[in-house]
Length: 473
Ligand code: ARG
Image (cartoon, rainbow, N blue to C red; front, top):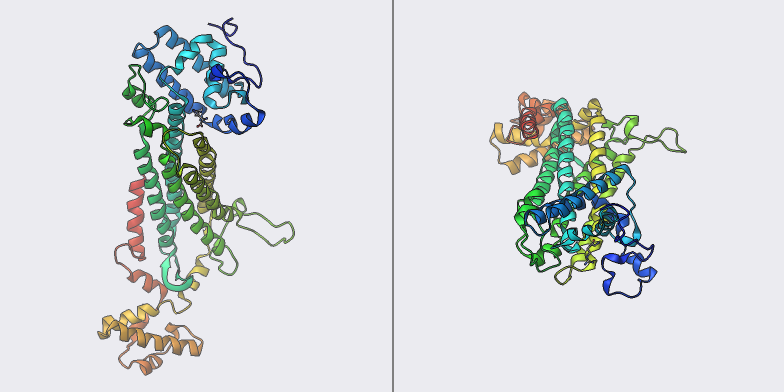
C-alpha cells in the first residue's frame, strides 16, 4: 500500500486520537491533551521503539500471527520511518501523544491499514517498558564507558606523578605526606566501583518485558524468547504484571548515577580548592577555566563547580522517580510516564560531567614544588617520629605518641619544623633519640616507608597503576 491509500484515515489536527478513540464521542479537553502528551520528551525513545517494533513484527511473522507479506510491509515502513527521523523529516505530532502512536500513525500513513497489525499481541504498556529498558541499558553502558575513560585520564596523571609529594589530609588538616599519584588513584578506585555498579544494574535489568502486552500476557502464540534474543536481552521477564509495572531498573541506574555524581563532586571540590592561590596545588589551562567580567585577574574553575553542583539534579531525579513509584498499585499507571524526564535529565547531566571531568583531569598540571612544600608543613611526619620511637626504642605506641607530642610542642614554640630540632633538643625530650631519627622526618621518607599493600609508597602506587592498566586495557 502507498501513502495515498484510500482506506488510510487522515489524521485531524487536535483530534488525532484514532489509536484509541473508538469508544469516544468527544475529543479531549485541551488541558487533558496538554497534561497527557509526552512526545516532546519520549521522542528520545525513537530508536528503541523502532527496534522493539522490528523484533515484534519479525516474531509475529515467524509465528504465523501475521502474514509474511504484511510483516514485510511493516518492516519496510519502519525502515522508511527510520530514514525520516534520521534526516529530520519525520513529523513528531502532539496529537499522537507519544512516540509509540506517532510512529504507528506515520506507518499507517505510509502503508495503510496493515500498520494496525503491528500492535497485535502488544500494548503500549509493554512497548514503553521495553523501549525505556533499552534506553536505560544503553545509558548504563555509556556511563560505564565514560567512567573507564575518566579512569584512564586519572591513571595517566597518576603514573606521571606517582612520586610527587603532597599533604594527605584528614579533617582537611595536614595529616601525613602522600603522593599526588596515590591521591588520584583513590578516585580510580571509586570510579571503578561506580562502573561496576552500572554493569551490575545492566545485568539485572537485562530481561525483556515485551510480550507482557497490557498486563496479563497474550492469547496469541507469541515467542517471547525470540524477541528477547533479538533485542539483546538474556531472557524474557517471567511475570507479565511485573513486566509492565517495574521501573526499579531505572531507579537502580539512577542510584548508580547518584553515587557516581557524588564521587565526581568530591573530586570537583578538590579541584576547586587546589586551584585557589591559597592552596596553589594545580593549575588548569584556559580550556577549563573562565574569566570574570569585572575582576581581570580571575581564572575560575567553573567546570569543576558545575560538576560539583550536578549531583543535585541527578540525586533529585532519583528522588523524583522514587516518589513517582511509591505506592503505585499494579500494574501500569500513567504516573509512570513521569519516569522519563528525570532519567533523561540525570544521564544528560552525568554524561556531560564525566566527559568534562576527564577533560579537566587531563588538562591539569600540578605545582609539584608547592605540593611538596605543603607536604612537610603542619608537622606531617609526627607519626613517623612516633613509629621510629616504637621501632627503634621499643616504646609502647601510646608513650611514643606522648613523646612526639612534646617534640611537636617544642618545635611549634621555636617556630620550626620537626626536622629542624637539633639532636640536643630531641634528647632533652627523650634521651635515647639518635641522629638516625632525621632519616624518617622528611616527607619523602615518610611516603616511601608506607609500603603496606595499598599504601602511599610510590612502589605501591605503581603496582596499583599497573593493575588498573590491565583491568582497563
Ligand atoms: N506514553 C506512555 C508512557 O510513557 C506509554 C504507555 C501508555 N499506556 C497507556 N495505557 N496509556 O508511559
